[in-house]
Image (cartoon, rainbow, N blue to C red):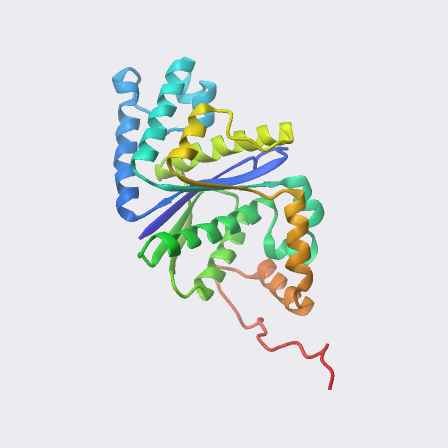
Length: 285
């Protein structure tokens, strides 16, 4: 079974951009990475530091929490070891960023219900890109999604998205979705590393107004050495999506789908409200 692990960044507080990023791989590769990751936690820096309960990139970079007292040289070296494990396991990686202000301004009403808020849009794209990768790069038809723990509203919305893919994807089997703690699901810690690095890179891009490779040498090497895809939903891209896709859809169908996304309960699925009949109100007799 393929498993995809995703973490969020920029979802807390007044961040101008929201990202969701993570890793995915075949069962053999994720098992290999998990064994190596646990070993790294148990013996960080070859015994020169006590065992870690978990790797958290923000804490590591800022030398807080379990990393209090670590020097910049020590935290940088641990990040190097983290990257080496990810590259050595030959995982694939994806990240998507969405500007919160532009999204909230441009995506409203029924479309906001269907595509979610900025975080919901990112989660939807994680499904799209992971499933595309699985269909293109593997022969395993089963795939499950693991996200870092989030509030109930995010969990419900992602559950609706999961249910939709489960019902309409035929060549792959969506085997489940869960929201877990990175203390128990250690590969969410790997997703945390990717999410923090990609978030930092996107903030640099927004500050400069230009597109360029990552400033941080370690992440620049990381995206070069593994299969990483990063996307940014610019204001122009959101407008283009509205013009080419949204404005050409049947408004009645859009309203029906929006109602489904607003009210559907993944724990008690009910599809009786969905109408699959064509809308004849605009056709001539």
